[in-house]
Amino acid sequence: MARIFITGSSDGLGMAAAELLVRDGHTVVLHARNAARADDAKRGVPEAASVVIGDLTTVAGMKDVAEAANSAGPFDAVIHNAAIGYREPDRSHTIDALERVFAINVLAPFVLTALMTPPKRLVYLSSGLHRQGNPSLDDLQWEQKPWNGTQAYSDSKLFDVVLAFAMARRWPAVLSNAVDPGWVPTKMGGPGAPDNPEQGATTQAWLAASTERQAMVSGKYFHHKALRSPHAAASDTRVQDQFITTCELLSGVRLPSE
Image 1 (cartoon, rainbow, N blue to C red):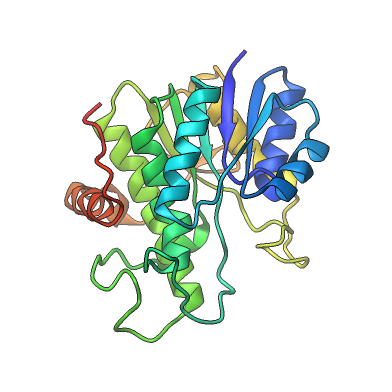
Image 2: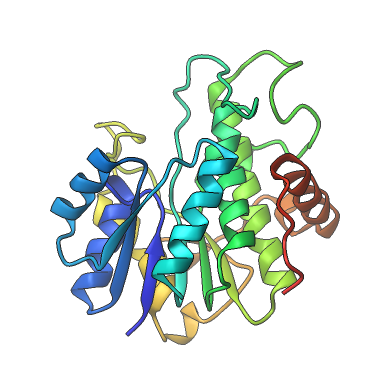
């Protein structure tokens, strides 16, 4: 059985993945941004081993979550699920002067990846909207261009695939993949979404713990346990390397070579 850490697992897809994994006998550590949300997580998945509490909107909070997760680990797999959606009405920034969608959706998984003890498997939640993402690293913080919440979200989900593929290349001993969970009726997806949460959570749980040959791969992009073709930029090693360098500069955290 595997030991698995899931960010953003106090509700939605993160909680659904946790439920699937504990049902199969795996040990799951949840994550919530504050004590109230941690209580929600414990009520939702009472079989979970524990809950790491920490706010991923700030670099300091990201570092705290990584430290707490390391204390609760080591882990066989980490599912980077925490994210905010495409309905942000205007550009807002964190106390680090970072655009909020980028900070939570992109920089947080980078910092946790860099600071946590490397697991055997990394799973990054993306979206089908990543194909509409812009791989340009210019104006990542939306300081020059007019704000577009859907575009900011799409860009962030593209960079999650870039990160997954970069880690597959840089850390060959770790299986690193990206997942499009589909459009599910969570707080982010809205009540009209056609997929169900369990179906949306199946692939990331499968990649985190399954010993099936199809799950023991790296540098791939999945939707409902099937391989899909990602945005071409995700496989561009120049984009990957420039992205990693940019995240290092913005966070002050260096990614270990292996």
